[in-house]
Length: 114
Image 1 (cartoon, rainbow, N blue to C red):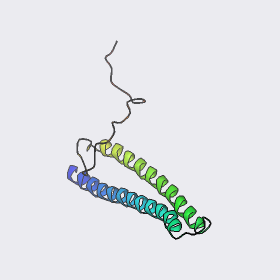
Image 2: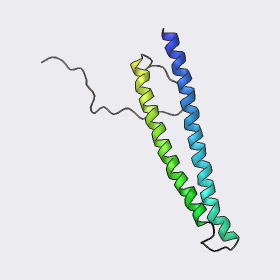
Image 3: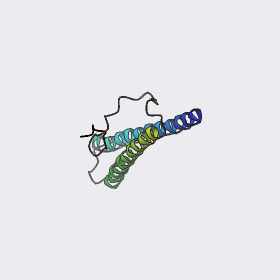
Image 4: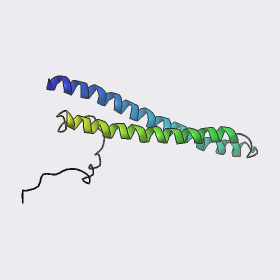
């Protein structure tokens, strides 16, 4: 049973990491595009009105991608809780950096009886 849970967790973790990487790549590429458009317009000596709607589209896309990143981070946090709940809390998945410590507020703790 533990073997099946671990395999399932590894499969989900791989998909999660791929989604996080894809969102970060999309943010990076869209930011590059948004930065390139005004610079290209200026180097071509064009009016500021040229490409304004396209620039706004790229900026709005950045906002949507930032929200997507926030949502995938929330998904990651919830999957970390599920990992602990199924008894795999001591197992590290992926090769990412250190995660921030979970907040200690709002959690029940065992105390000595008075």
